[in-house]
Each structure stands twice: as structure tokens, then as C-alpha cells.
Length: 249
Image 1 (tube, rainbow, N blue to C red):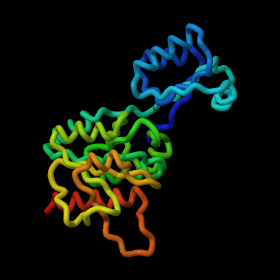
Image 2: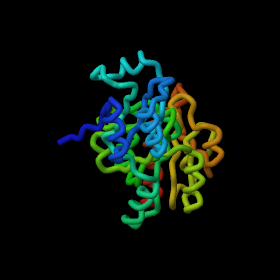
Image 3: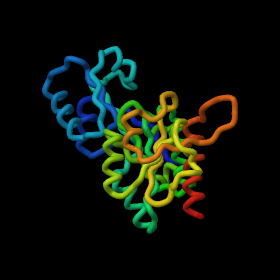
Image 4: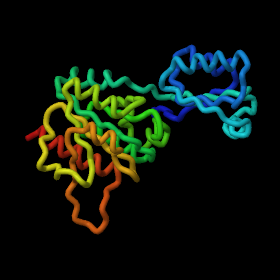
């Protein structure tokens, strides 16, 4: 039976507080702007213990718009039905398989269909997991789960606060990073064997300057058509299977 990955709305002060205290992953917390009373402050203290929770202070009209019951009491949370992994969990998968780590790092993918397709590619190419940023990017929604064609059940996805710092941390653990960008070296000329991370940028802006500077290689995909760019998930797939080809060689 297919799991439902859609975020669940939790509203009302007691319900939101219990969701935090039970250890559920809360993606977003919406709080009535200017509300200073004790119960709301208690919820905010709990929220700040959960580093993955994005807190937004909004007007009552926004809360009314989100609310399913009309009884939000000034607080609404989005609780993820899918639990994110830690980056270390992804490395553990590589260790368990006796393989060099192979990860996808996504720098601001906003389209849920792209994210789902990339998770599917990660699974099929033998990657050990996908790393996404906490801010300015799509998370694990029902649309992402559907687009992954079931791969989300088998592929670990970690959400981090700082992509550039995460790359630095993984470089210290022996990984090399190749980002996909038009201005780089043709991917066939690069050595993509060994512990590696593929970095794919935002659909419109590509890989950010800071993240690109952290990468060891810039890999370009040779193209012969009349337009100058590939869809982010297609570019990811092309580069991922060049890694597979080199690993099999």
C-alpha cells in the first residue's frame, strides 16, 4: 500500500505543542504575529529546539487561510509524514554496502517533480542518498513522493541548513564534489570515480557561486541542440550515469 507523504496540518496550541514534544518532524510553524502569551511562547521554545523547523510570523488572515478547522488559536504547524535522514545515515548506507559514498547534493531545487525525479535517479544509479537545503527549496511532499515512483521508500533524504558547509564537512570525510554547470570541463574528461558528490543547482539560476567554489570539479554535459540548458533532473541523470559508467569501467 502506498504511503501518504503529504504534510499533515496540526492546529491549536495543545495539538502543536504535543506534536513537538512527541518528536515529530515539524517542517513549518506559523504563529500569529505579535502574539506574546505564555502558551505560544512555550511552543516557540519547543520549536527552537528543533533545528529543522522554519518559523514564520504571519497575520491572522494567513492562519485563517491555512486552517482546516477554523480553530487554530494563533498557531498552525506542518508536520512531515516522512522523516528526514541525517547526512551520517547516508554515509552509513555506503559503509553497509562496502561502497565508496555516492551522494546527490541539491542547491535549491524548487520544483517537486524535479526533486521526485532526482530521488528516483538516485535510487536507480546506486547513490546512497540525497541532500537538500532547509530553506528556499522544496521538501518531501506528496507530489515529490509520487514523482519518485516509489524510490522515496528506499532512498534516504537529508535536509541541512547550509549546503556549502555540508560539502566542506563531507570533503573532510574524503568525498570529492562535481557540480553540473555549462562552463566546466566535459564530464567525459573528468575522473568521477571514488567517493563523490554530484551537485545540481536551481532550475533557473544553477549552482550558487558559494556552493560552486566549494566543489572540486565543474562538469559540463556536451550538448548539440539549439537551446542551452537541460532540465535539472535530466542533467542530474546524465551526470549520475556517467559516474555509474566510470565505476563499472
